[in-house]
Amino acid sequence: MDFTFTEEQQAATEAARAVFSSVAPDAVPSPALVPGAVADDIDRPLWAGLAAGDLLSLTLAPEHGGAGLDLVALCLVLRESAKVLARVPLLETCAVAMTLQRYGDRALAAELLPGVGRGELVLTVGANGRTGHDPAELAVTARPDGTTTGNTPSVTTSGTTSGNGDNAGSGNGDGTGGGSHWVLDGVQSGVPWAQAADWIAVPAHTGDGRAVLALVRRGHDGVTIAEQVSTNGELFGEVRLDGVRIESSELIEAADAWEWLHSLLTTGTCALALGLGEAVLAMTSEYTGKREQFGFPVATFQSVAVQAADRYIDLRAMEVTLWQAAWRIAVGGAGALPPAGDVAVAKIWASDGVRRVVQTAQHLHGGFGADTDYPLHRFHAWAKQIELSLGPAAAHEEALGDLLAAHPLG
Image 1: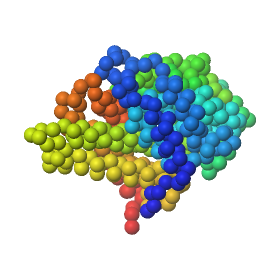
Image 2: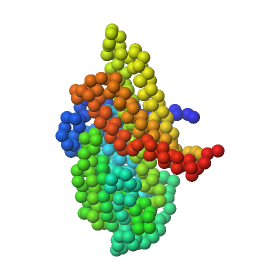
Image 3: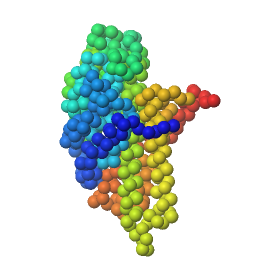
Image 4: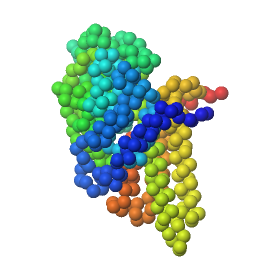
């Protein structure tokens, strides 16, 4: 298996490092030092820098002003962003943009995506549902305008595409599916940077049980956002939809659109976990190499070296499973299991791995690990947020077991 990155992917990594070199983790607002949310907005100067470096358009097609790269390239950039705790919705914006490009209405994509690439529009997505414990699409209902909740007629879709930007849903404005408008009702909780976003992707379900994906303007009539604060201190939102009426072109009906977007978000979060873990292990290596006891650096003590080595193994496992999942999603490579199996394995390693790396770092740093003058506590808060976003490894192991049962190997 060849994990060599292409020249374009390597160039994206170098560009990301150049942009993120201006971010100092010591200066990132800390939830331990700021009551409530650490800030009211994203890091706008950094967002502008990403746009100027063509990193927001990285995965957009050339007709939308992008470079046409894939999820692997995006994960490389996300990995670098996590090393400096970049306070930008890079994952959410790019994942929603990729989904709109692949499955959405052509006219809407042509209207929005160039602005996304220029940094003029911020996109986010509600992926947690009402409580975070149930499928997100069950938290919101979508019905054609003129019908009542619970009696939604069956809606005909127009198929899917191979990712070339062709329209895959009924979002063509021709009234397919019971009318030219849809009505949304429900709540999505824990929406990242909802107050800063221009558009919010909202998974929903129809009366016949299909999962659809709605694109809703933040200021749309019927949309209210209540403030929530994440574990790392960022401002999230509870997005409530009360009779929100949207155009049919703003609803993506393709059968696998929400599943694909969710897989992008999950794999991207695994990339964030890897980048953060690598930064934390590097900090730990530097600290233990300088900290002396009994006249020797503590890094030379066997117990310290063994713990650091175990965490290095965790990171390498996180890395290989991440690239396997990203590659399967990007190119649709054949495998004994569907791509969801590779994503589940990556989630297992990322969820447990990032927690173990940060816990070991705190232990090996001693009191400095909890010192708010030292940046490690910031990484600890972000790692916990990533772990909570991914969910417990046991749940992913159960999902993997279900896939193995449905697709026997050998």
